[in-house]
Image (tube, rainbow, N blue to C red; front, side, top):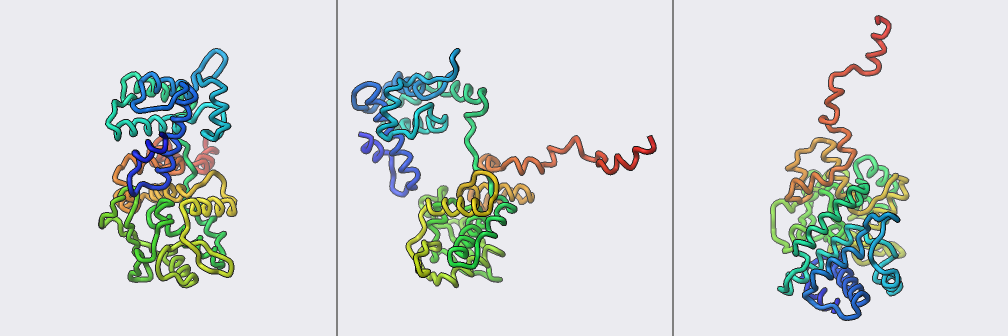
Length: 352
């Protein structure tokens, strides 16, 4: 049943990550429902079932501490059979995602949607507030942004070996072309790359999260200049790539293998960050957030930044800014504007 429901949710062209997240959510719903009610789940799901799912998985405060309503024997069975990784309350974002997937399933099946019920919506709103009041658990976890300084340290780990040249070109391509997503890096092809004047390149982003239909749009032409262009040229000469995936596995003897997967791109970023010894948690998305954060630091025009990243929402772009950007905000230092420095204070202390 879960597989059939997941198939109904999916559409041709959805990313692999989306497909996997939908499958996992529907499998969990089916397993939880079977364990809770002793029968197979069918659509539409009743409103009380959705409410039970929420209170089974969201932590609430009691006199004895935080707890959920999920019976231990059901929780243990779900863990033992691989439907969840560990015991304990679900992360709030995971809970919300699973409610969202069930809601989507009802919409596509044209069944009455229990997730849109006023009681369910109110319960979810109050749950978010409760988590936030307990210390911000409702806030999404943010990986550290790879801004210019830590990125340079990461690039310094890339030597002149074939792997080093590939990783340097990959990192600079992803960062400098607007913070490309790992799926976009893995899907980058030689055919979409062309040389421009002055040693630069233009990359035509033919498919992205915001352009899944692959429409031809002027804003999808991404410039690759300076260090990034030099690294790309070096990689192409060293690898001999003249068609197909830009970034590939390197086999023994320096033979080019198949194109890198999304997961491989993520591992390259994490491994290079660990090798550089930069502090914090990093992922492939750190390249995207790092580009936007650095653009904010250097006061790059918001319109140009959005043209590079491909964002259509100003609010979304602002959400990528990290604390580093806030610290250099002029608005944050209004109280200190024009105030004497410590050295200036010291020079006048003798006259008091």
